[in-house]
Amino acid sequence: MKKDSKIFIAGHRGLVGSAIMRNLQAKGYNNIITRTHAELDLLNQQAVINFFADENPDYVVLAAAKVGGIIANSIYRGQFIYENLQIQNNVIHQAYVQGVKKLLFLGSSCIYPKNAPQPMTEDCLLSSALEPTNEPYAISKIAGLKMCEAYNQQYGTDYIAVMPTNLYGENDNYDLEKSHVLPALIRKMHLGKCLQNNDWDALRSDLNKLPIEGISGEATEEEILAKLNKYGISLTDNQQPTTENSVAVTLWGTGSPFREFLHADDMADACTYLLENISAKEIAKVNAAGVTSTVGAKSICENSWTSFLNVGTGKDLTIKALAEKVKEIIGFQGELVWDDTKPDGTFKKLLDVSKLNELGWKETIALEEGIEKVYENYKLS
Image 1 (cartoon, rainbow, N blue to C red):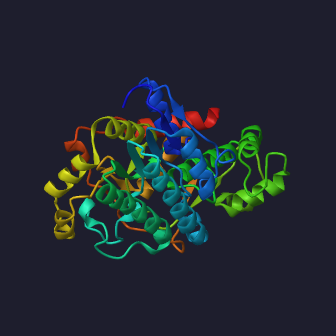
Image 2: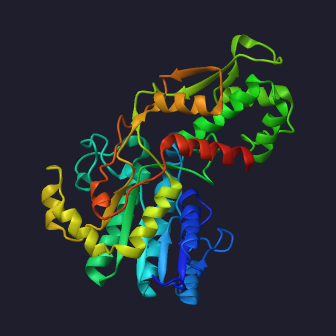
Image 3: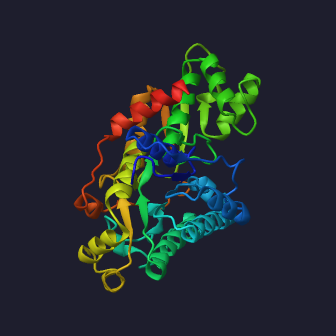
């Protein structure tokens, strides 16, 4: 890419899109195109056709998506599959129509089967059944990466896809109904700490920035306490607020599943690296040559168009260990309660990132450092 290449980032205000934009700008790219949802509805096919015809970008980063954690994936199943398929179809096809030089599609590690061998290699794709809780979202992402491969095969395009592990960072979603596990833990324990310290100014400030189901910092103490209690942030023993409170934070599941986490700034750096240096053909070549599992070895070797890569750290920890780590960093002194009547999701989702490492990229931000950075940013936002 040239520094003045026209680069369209779809989803530039989200966690990944904003990180990619910052990374590109830091590297001197000066012709980045963005549109808010109000300016361009990616679900609207005609609007996307008009946009690509008018702007004719050289490169496209498709980071726009309907996303959420285990609660949102359970509730909004129809929206997750419809909206993601629609966005992908519109953007990927118009990139082809307008002759975009290269496209990078953001997928997710949830594309892999529920019982995939650990760590998960790229050849595990479509080898067995998906995790039911996020199946609609996963199917849409599989369709997106397969669309990129099919266009490469039929039209000679250079479309690559990346399957990131669990991401966190600046501009994350802290909505307690829709957030992923790490931002949910951060916000719950921050609110728990505010309640523990009877710091109503900080608590009301947080709710004013991001109300919970319409309850802002302007609500009464009783209304706020009731809403916090609904989301598992509660005073213990039915006590009344005092100068120093005993607080419990209830979390979904048993805490026993393992998860891997990558800072969005590292993810962005990997994306820029691939855009600058690695083609779809090179990814397909390393995939075909580097099969490490027998699960999908035959299909991946026969299909030389497999142009997607895992992006992660190759290291994981239990949700319980993560919660304890967040608790320590935030300084929450209360009790963590695990509600084992709620689903855990997939037990282990560790990515094999050896192919990406082989192509020359590796993460740099340690988890503790990343959480500290994110929490400081959260308090200041």
